[in-house]
Image (tube, rainbow, N blue to C red; front, top):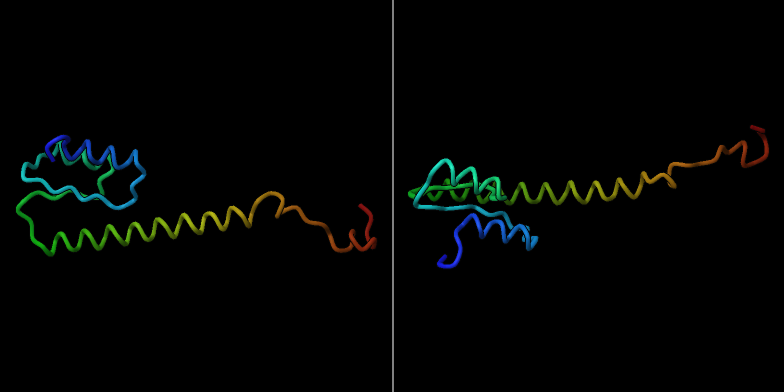
Amino acid sequence: MPDINGIEFIKRAQKANITAPIITITAYASTDTAVQALRAGAYDYLSKPFAHEELLKIVENSLQARHLFQEVTYLRGKLDKKYRLENMIGQCREYAAGLRDY
């Protein structure tokens, strides 16, 4: 990328709310850049040369993690709707029928 480096790309993708997993691939690997990439939001970091099977496994894992994140987000939303305070406040059947006085 002529205008920006990989770390800057990841930061811009995060600001743009891009939800696709980002896998950083570099020919110039260092621990420092790997840590920076992961902290910026990359799912994983690979240095060249790498086995194609390794890349395929990382892609598979990243998509599975994304699916699980989306599922958790969906289920939390359902729980939040179901267990709102107004849904928890009820009334005793006996009280509502006038059979019990509190």
